[in-house]
Image 1 (cartoon, rainbow, N blue to C red):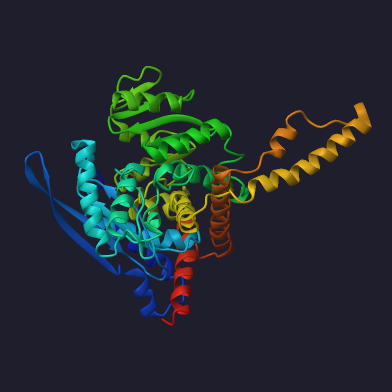
Image 2 (cartoon, one colour):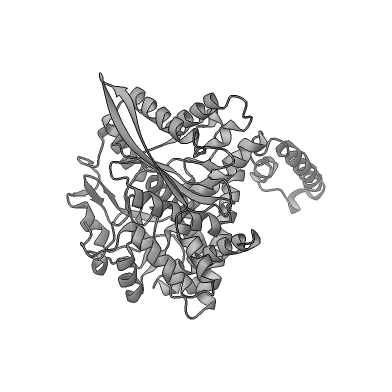
Amino acid sequence: MSPRNEPSFRQSVDLMFNRAVALMDLPPGLEEKIRVCNATYTVRFGVRLRGRIQTFVGYRAVHSEHMEPVKGGIRYSQGVNQDEVEALAALMTYKCALVEAPFGGSKGGLCIDPREYDEYELEMITRRFAYELAKRDLINPSQNVPAPDMGTSEREMAWIADQYARMNTTDINARACVTGKPIGAGGIAGRVEATGRGIQYALREFFRHPEDVKKAGLSGDLEGKRVIVQGLGNVGYHAVRFLSEEDGAKIIGIIERDGALLDEAGIDVEAVHQWIVKHGGLAGYPDARHVADGSAVLEHECDILIPAAVEGVINLGNAKRIRAPLIIEAANGPVTAGADEVLRERGTVIIPDLYANAGGVTVSYFEWVKNLSHIRFGRMQRRQEEARHQLVVNELERLDRYLGDAWSISPDFKEKYLRGADELELVRSGLDDTMRAAYQSMHEVWNGREDVPDLRIAGYLVAIERVARSYRAKGL
């Protein structure tokens, strides 16, 4: 647990914002307009379960409407409260601005432990929550578009989308009321992996800049880098799986609720994931050393630390003992404002949450566009691409026959070149481009201004300037 004098998550977000705007020349009124949360709706509703009425408390916060719709996930957790939801909504505003997704920031939450209810009960609760929000336009394709978050998945998003469609039977764009849906309910290929994939693309882009890598005291690329992940949920699992399978990183530590696994030789991420699915935790996993105090493994020596679960896990209580030279925030707010200062003074490089975990909202943007256009990506152009490529292959094969042994086409060239991009490849391409461009905008500020000490402040500067520009264009 973090010390009592630690700022709350919301205070941390405000502190980061204040550090950034102190380096900007914004009119005080506009600064305040960007900082404050526009509105928060609290709903209390009853659902008859197990022979009695149970009352649930939920929230939907709208931070900024400089662009609409506003965007942000819905989390199911007993720890959900108004302050947390408003902080997350603010973070969504800056996140969307940084990656140039045309949304304002919003966030929702329901005070519930989803593990205490069966699927039918969760569906009843979710549908009622969706009804309460939708009738106030807090779920709407053109005004407020939720997505999955901690404790929710594509299953809950499908229920929400169906509930909205039942309430708005003539809305042709009803499916766009929520993102993160299953493919069969209007979702998009690559959405489930999106945040984890974004972590991978963020790290790849970081390692393309030797001067930034040097600031972290590292060198080379991701090959062989020792990684510890805290939280093997959807985000953490996909991030470390891709990093180990595709980039040659070595996953030496996995931290979960019931302890941690350590193995300097590397851990099989997929095997651990399957073990958790089957057994509900890490306990008993045979192929790595189990550490009962999982939080202690955050302090284990590694090259890259990926906190991918909840906010505040790196705080004033443990910041001085964190040995990773590079931290990438896969969760929202895993490093508190106090810890951020301690780590920055020690030279630790932090790739901040408002950039690092923006893969989810980026692919949600693609899904929203797909729903509004009513056509899957690649449907119009894929075969035409293949036909054009076939012309090139035919010409190369003609040369191959003419030149004989002097020149030949590589065996797998034809197959790779002829295949047009499908939806998943297009989504990954768009996400990669987004993460590259966003990092480069932060990199330029971080390296171009002597008064910008880290990537977090660089990210906030880029994001706040874009929000301010949008408000100015509206005449504010």
